[in-house]
Length: 481
Ligand SMILES: [Fe+2]
Image (cartoon, rainbow, N blue to C red; front, side):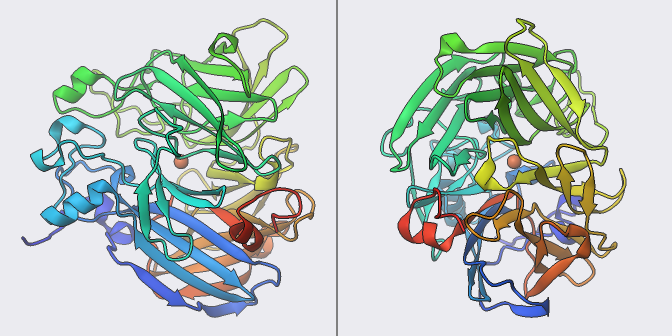
């Protein structure tokens, strides 16, 4: 069967499907020097397209997963990319075509997809308790070999997870070597069940709680502090009757307020406190922390619909101005059901990150992809979360960037003292670079740029694993350089 991708915007330019696995032993230095002390592996996941989609209205979040690693060893950087060979990927490889229809709508799949899990493994990668997994929020994780990126089994974590899926945005509390994660629509498409799981340093389940959401909607990310868990519900809602008619997985309900559940980190369903705020949406949270009776959650907030390709039930397109980092504050002492919100930074941004050693604690430094102007190209920037001040790399029009990754300068370096790893799209040359910036001097530009002989089409999220953690399987004090 001939393969020809349709001429749709998603597949044009940098978005053209790459469909190539790569191994490059030693990236060439373009400029600068790789800082000493960066020892470890950066894992990332993103979407590509195995075959042309079944429908022309494909959405970018639905590509098959491509896993990437960058291994740093004394200035030598190895790059590997491999398809995530999920059940969906293998079935399609056998059929030599796409078998899954519109995003997450199982009612318009090809007959050969019946009974096969539809997860793509395209969103994030997590290393914990000695195991590397690749994540997509509509399926369970798949294990991957941390050295070769060979796909291992789909895993329910030794039977610990009875939910049908796990989030692609788990929180790794490095100080406690603990993973906190959740499932939404946890008993299947259209269910209102939320399940929260906590896994300890040895990977065993330490806590589990289930409760009911206000609707069966999207919960792409959440917040965790040392004391609390915060789960926001934005009004992108699944209607099974719409799916049966071949429609989209989510619909935007601009008449519904945001609902947020706040509960103790090891709380019960009865301890969930509910809050409400103005209609808005978000995919990503930068961080959260508890300060006395206040719980703060920093959200990349869209005033409207963050996924405008999901329409309203009556078919309207609702877009949003560019997103702004916004702090939600939940006053647990007041008894109010409304949360306060204030803007943290005036410059639009997305894909927020912190110094991961301090996730869940008060942080001064945030890192994001930031737009130069509402319609302009993007670059990477650091935000002072206390003042809103921005430190931004002005790199010109010929580059764009992926989500940045913070790497500490040393195991005990202060919060925010380290490096940023950033994949660059060299838009006029059709290939990528890996840039390393000083996280405290972002405007100075990269201290090193390394050439990638291929185009890294797209990555969503990833995580840095220090060499010592890769070897001994444990995060914690002294192990995270
Ligand atoms: Fe995400």
